[in-house]
Image (cartoon, rainbow, N blue to C red):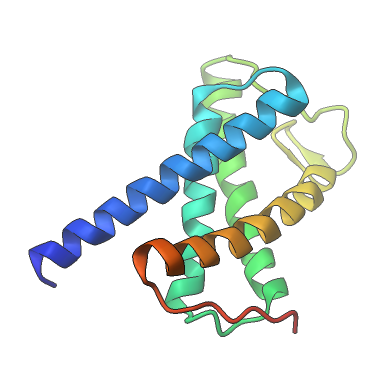
Length: 144
């Protein structure tokens, strides 16, 4: 891969990570009234994941497959981040202990379902922006 292509890919990844981080951080501020810088990082990584999975698979999979893969990635990242920041560092950024079907207060099914809706938006937005801004292949979204 030529140096110019590598620079373009790094620029693309940084841009989408920062955009995803800003969007998710903003959502948390709007709905919770506060957030933490680690949520910026997690939101950015999840948004970037949504785009990379689509581009790598040439947008050939149904949205439901991309969403399930994204939810697994997002809750894995959330769980790991929660263990580090909430348990080890005692930052108490979030606690799902009062939610049904939760694991150590770090992840729970109700929020995984909410994340699936956010992931749908992230996949659609990411596919569109990667095509328009970085001339990635045009996404062809389909449900099944």
